[in-house]
Amino acid sequence: MVAFGRDSEMDILHHQLKKEDQPSLPKEIKPIAVSVKDFGFMFGHDYQWAKSLIDEGRIKSIKGWGELRVPLTEVDVILNSGREESVK
Image 1 (cartoon, rainbow, N blue to C red):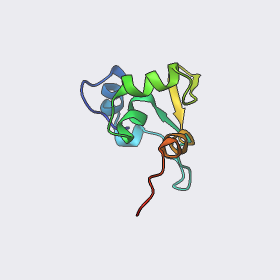
Image 2 (cartoon, rainbow, N blue to C red; image 1 turned 120 degrees about the vertical axis):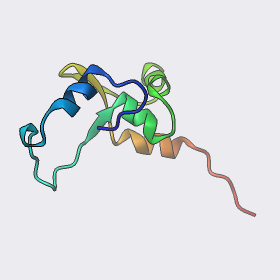
Image 3 (cartoon, rainbow, N blue to C red; image 1 turned 30 degrees about the vertical axis):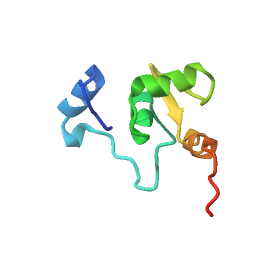
């Protein structure tokens, strides 16, 4: 988990866990969704930027298990929304 700015309670609890207490996933399993904060960070923005995209319906989100997540497929939505510039 990427933590920037003030640590949330989950970030603090995550760092308090000992490495051996953390679940180990097979290396081939990759996340399919990220937190709203991490999604904003991927584009050089913050939580509020990503949350506003969700609120405006410009990107999809998943709500469940206590945290709002953004599917990584929404990265393509952002990248494809930019207009192409012609090169002369």
